[in-house]
Length: 297
Ligand SMILES: Nc1ncnc2c1ncn2[C@@H]1O[C@H](COP(=O)(O)OP(=O)(O)O)[C@@H](O)[C@H]1O
Ligand SMILES: [Mg+2]
Image 1: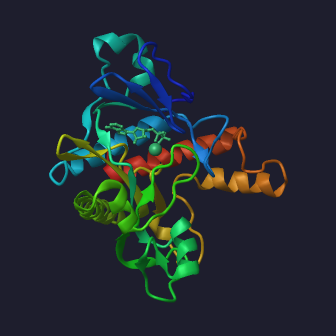
Image 2: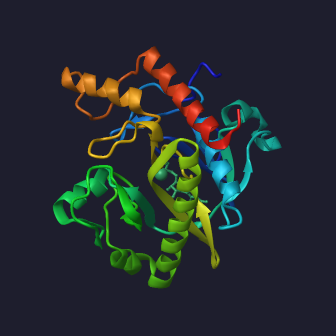
């Protein structure tokens, strides 16, 4: 197991965009998406990272992209195991955690699918008994499974929080025909993935998918069904009516809650340094999620 966390990649030359977790290099027709070991909670990146997290995330996405290949085309050219010659000097920053992807025209909508009532969905439900304009039955509890998964799009905010919007608003932004297709495809991907994960002891409560266009072809992009883009809950501990333990970030959350209650952190950047024990436990959770889902070592 890796002992050091990779916090930033540095590949000279191509333009770089740093997300919260991923470093994205523009290689012309292709993008190099590199998942670092950074970890965020409450939308804030922590001071230190989780060794091996980026690799687990990238390999998990790859596993799903391959698994869904019969259902939808995806943006993956290759997982970087062996760096191409021009990137060889940076192989240690890339191995297992970088994906070479087709550069797409991204659809500016976050395609969120929810199977359970959590997060902003739970908040909206309490106020309006609906999420993104989708009406729901009365009397549902926090984190309860929905009668069937629903599509609840959001805007793609460059900075700050994404905003939930109705399907009609998404159609105004991206076009109705396209959104109908993306809704159906997103529901299909979520349903297949969630069903598979459930048999392996993980509830995927909800997820965010991103789609892009290559000419007229609709292509699944970004990352897929990872703990960073979805809520993963340990199925064995699932109990509606309360907040659920997160499969991967529970140790970090608990630690941060303590810090906040002691007045040592206000949930604003910069993120605090996580103690070694929290880091180690979290690293092993990511590894466990990966193994449990994929059956790979
Ligand atoms: N195939 C692709 N073509 C073009 N852009 C993509 C592709 N796949 C993902 N992206 C974009 O790359 C960016 C990833 O960066 P970002 O989301 O900021 O990283 P993080 O998820 O670590 O915060 C997103 O804006 C996403 O829409
Ligand atoms: Mg993102």
